[in-house]
Structure formats: C-alpha cells, structure tokens
Length: 323
Image (cartoon, rainbow, N blue to C red; front, side):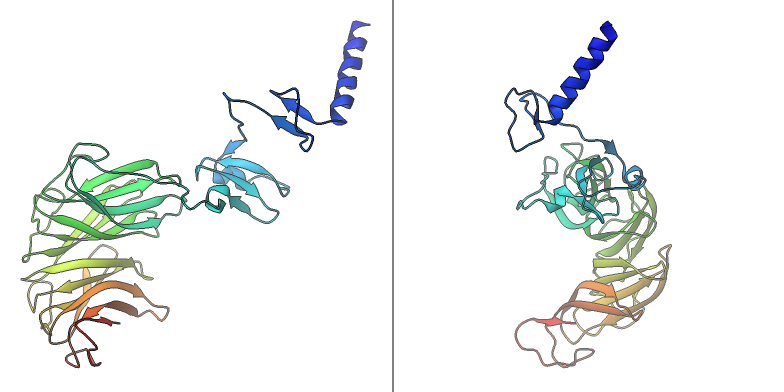
C-alpha cells in the first residue's frame, strides 16, 4: 500500500511539473523558461567530451550543447555543424594573455593550430622568470603553444650563446612546427652549425611537443637575415630572407647591390636544393614569401633600386613595394 502511495505521489508530481516551469535554486522561476536555474556559488556543467567523442554522437538535433575539452569551449549543434561559441561571441576581445619574464619579450608571429589553439613565435631576453625557461644567450627564440583560450600548453627557449631572433613560425603537415630566425650564434646551445658571417639564417624543425628534430644554419660571408618560411607542397620548405652576402658559403651567386632578396628552397630535412639572389643596384629587403598554386613562389618586400638588376620598374619614392 505504501509503495502505491509513493508511486501516486511521484506521478502526480511529474504531471504537475510538466504543466509548469521548473525552478532549481529558486521558488519563482521565470515564466518564459521551462527550466530556471539560480545560483551564486555553483555553475552549470554541460556534458564534457573531446572532438572525437563529440563526432561520435548519433542522431544529433539542432540545439544540442556540449563542452569540448579539445578546444576548451562550449559548442552548439545548429542542425548541420558544431558552432564554437567562443569564436562566435560578439565581443571585441574573446581571450587575452600576457606572457613573458623579467626582461624584454617580443611576439613576432602567431598562427592558429589544427587543434584550435595557437602557436606564438618571438624572442626573449629573460631567463628562468615568469613564463620563460632557461635562457641560452643575450636573446633567444621563444616558442609558445597556447590553448584556444590562451593558456600555455608548453613553451621552448631556443638559441645559442649570442643573438637569436625568431621571425616566423608555421605548423607543418605532421603536426609539428618550422620556424626561421636570424642568428649571430655559432656552435653553442641549440645552434649546431658554424656561423658563416656577421649574421645567419637559422631554420629549426620542431615536433608537436616542441622538441627539436633538426636545425640548419645558412648564410654567406656578410649578414643574412631570415624573415619568412613556409612548408611547400613537396614536404620541403621555402625560406625568404635578405642578404648582404655575395658568392660565399651558402650564397652561391653574385649579389646585385647593397642587399638582395634571398630565396632558398630546402628539402624536408633542411638540405639546400637551390637559392636565388634577387635585387637591383641598391637595397632590397624581403618580408614575406609564399608558394603559389602553380608550384612557383611569390615574394614581397621593399626596394630602393630603380630599373637595375631584377628591378624593372622606375622607383616612385625613397622606398617602393617590390613584388
């Protein structure tokens, strides 16, 4: 008899709840909501799962919501795809991070990674302070892996005993990273090659965890400064730099003027396949290079030359954009 009474009460309660809105933590739920949760000390937890687990959900309906542990954000299914609510917010700033140590720390490049986070490349003069690990020289390359919300996953300080300045970093097809830097170091710290001149280009390949797989130091007898790098369709790399060298060490061709665009094609392991010096009688500085759809390359920077060498146009002012 008591069991029947309990069942009757439960059924009556359910029928009553189905006819009105429900409040948790409040006796006066809002009439516009079927469920009104009120709390000043606890939050609401949706189901938490990775992107892989989320993709395994069957028979999804629009409005389904989860917390994605891979991207670190709440996501909602809109009937055809999952929407990341962090990137959909109409806020001018979704996340921000202040990173560094007790000296000068500079961010030079950033790219979103395949996992929804970010890879930051820059330089640091700090050592064993704040977010920065052990320094190697007067300035080091600093690589920082961030989550989608800006939390540090890992960071690496890389360099030799002198000056190493990271200019660009890119995630590679294997989930690792490639970066280029300008370096005055030689056979010290992480720099395993011998310096060719006043300053060299330094190319470093990292795995997905930020561990070094290989490095390449390249340049001529004078200063050679790396500015841009990209993985190419054949699995190798195209390096963009500007060079004051001429027919020395890795610079195999004569210079055109004071400084030239220096374009270097590298294999997947960093071996030089070919290199080109491009410029006019005076000064050229390459700032970016990218592979094009036809398998060639497009580079841009500035020139102070006019109708000399590879520069065919007439200079408009003190410096012109050169493509």
